[in-house]
Length: 495
Image (cartoon, rainbow, N blue to C red; front, side):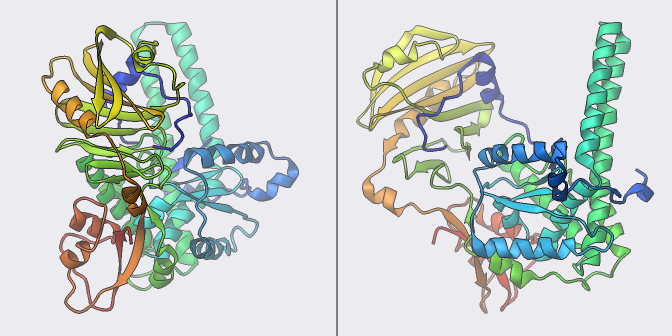
């Protein structure tokens, strides 16, 4: 959660509460708007060079740039990391088939795992994705995939196809109305668009693998990264940590068939183990890179959320998993119970009892309002009901700011009171020493020493749950893989 309590808070309306209660579904390469023989770059790609010609699409992409920065936490500045990424991009642009390509690469300060392209040659990669990759070849595979979207004009094609489907939907609705044929037409339109998007991804895979092979990289890196994505997806399904719309997973499905296709493409160019992986250079570039949340958004440490800037903390019960975003902190737990925490700026003279009744809570029961003191902080709690759900709403004033804890449970649940009480009672103000001791997590590259094992190296990690699983995930290791003395691995630590 950003330390900007003056920002406009999300409205607590019925739909928002139910979305909180139900959780969010996983979504992720975004190209903003088969026949393998057709998998080739466009002869007339829309690149940054066309800016000088006043290209409309490129101008639109340029307008989107600040919005993307705002959505993904801004640009991540690290000269060492930027030089490493630039070298990989540079090696991919030395392509005799596309001599006029020009790209602008931006590293986004987001823990989400994503990479995408805009028409005009604007490439974006998050530090979260860089933390998951394990060598320059894997990064090259991701970037080449995005470059393929640009050179094949996929953004333009998708905009055109979406416009066609919108028109077809309007016609089907207006002409056929509620006729079953209208529903069939709408379903077919969605399937056509989904198949079109899938074919674009497969085309970008094929073009990207060919590009990294021509650049001298290991062409099997694409399949390796897809496998890492599959492992990442599986870990998210266990933890429940999902951030709708900001992730690579929605339009980059990591199905086994897609991995097999990537392997088949790679075999056309080189046998396994012969291409350049450039692992040491990549690891040196990401060493020290921020991992997870920034100090401005606060830190999640297990089942506890701590914000060094705001100086506050709270915990969730066993079985709940916290997900921190710029807008709010949410947590999901057993029995479809969900929690949301955020801040709002209100006049200090406004009583909390007046604020909680000011209209932002749907279905509020005024008779349930009660004043409280939570660890020395003024607070007010109340209950609300809406569309099959029950809610506990607690507002707390601490050091002049007001924070909101919302707990949602199905109407038939008997756990709302105990859960809400446990969370709200855990809220407290951090001491100056505690604030000072909180440091962000970073990726650190360490050399494996004789006697080291996966378990001993994972034990050195801080601020993450399921340490062995996380160690294997970020290092691209299978369950049976081991470490070798002298090798380099990634660990996550706040030191």
